[in-house]
Length: 194
Ligand code: AMP
Image (cartoon, rainbow, N blue to C red; front, side, top):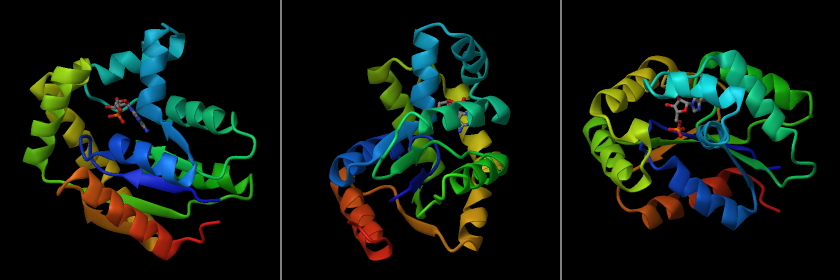
């Protein structure tokens, strides 16, 4: 199985690239942000809880997020692999993911990290907010807090995957198609694709 963590700050283009990768490699796309937004839309208890954090640009607590992710993974019987988009975002989540996958005799194949300058991120997110209508994409203070959360809690995960020999870093700017080509090159150089 090909299990990829698509890693990077908010606005790095993870969702866009994930859409292209799942099509090419027939993988399951698991975006924790998308699942939270679906729960908010259908007004579930999980949605209400997640919203109270997302509206501020804070991370949703680990316990809730991990439980949700594990239940999402469990929905697929024989997938070719997963693209984890926006998960893990803390060391606790990364450890939980490894442990959970191990119970299924699975593991992360590689972590692909998209790197983009902070100023570029803020610009991209505010622009996306105009089209998507996502509340957390429209307020500059919330956007800056999301980037801060990323720098404080998520960026240290690069070290976690580096130590496992799984981290592959690339620039997340320079055109969607060029980045996609580079991602595919890295994947095919580092994984056995069947
Ligand atoms: P995203 O769509 O990935 O940008 O996520 C939007 C928001 O959902 C984030 O700002 C967090 O509030 C929340 N969120 C998504 N994924 C996670 C996660 N793995 N851990 C904690 N919060 C998350």
